[in-house]
Image 1 (tube, helix red, strand yellow):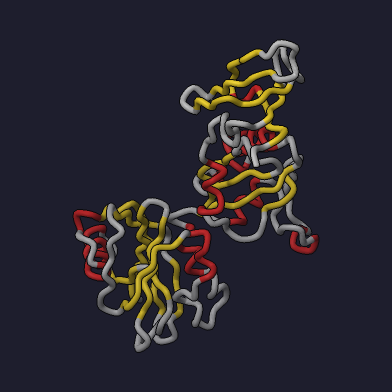
Image 2 (cartoon, rainbow, N blue to C red):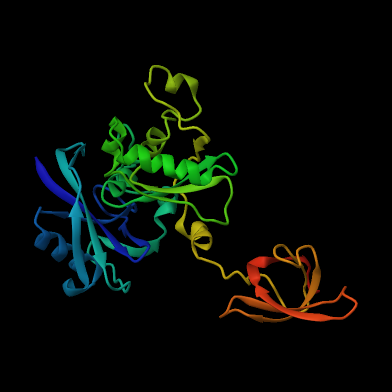
Length: 304
């Protein structure tokens, strides 16, 4: 029995993939993390530094997952997934590696990675599963429109209550509800099936796969969209927008609250730092200038 590890190197939101050379005896031209033999943090960091050119002082050993027994044909190998965090993204692939690429973890399924050439079950997904055991992916839960916050609250209650779903606390890292997105939630988790279990939808939409499972579907949580979501697609929804976003000088706006509710005005200036707009009520007998918060108006006609 050989004790090996795959080190998954993260820099900020990116995951490092290294491509093995075409003459590699085990995984020719397949994408990898950093493969090595050993089980101590020092051995892992040394191997990562040797394979990437990243100085050891720029690497941090984050933690390890459960070993996976993998039949490599000639022998059985116990492979331990390890997460290493780098403080630099400058990489020079060395040794068995010829290429390096920093990727969004949500696109990992688009890469042909190690283990995919082995004659074994889940060979094409094993590399991603091992990364999930030490890292995380983002999944999208489809909800009834208007029920997003209630569903998020119920997820939290299931995770932190007294039932069996509390066992998912180590697998579900966060539940995100961007205020500007309707009908969807983002869940950070190690694997999709944990999210399906949390909302009582294990087996997806396949009735045969769900048959015999003892689960209580979470009301208004419809399904988990297949596959991990690329972080790059989600970040725009997670970044808070100023209440004046989309309001420009010259726009026609309608006041939606207060004494002038329903009145229309032309925007004279926008103060993003104060989140205010200055505008003129042009339908009044005597023109009047007002200053209001950007979320107290809505744009009805934009500047061309």
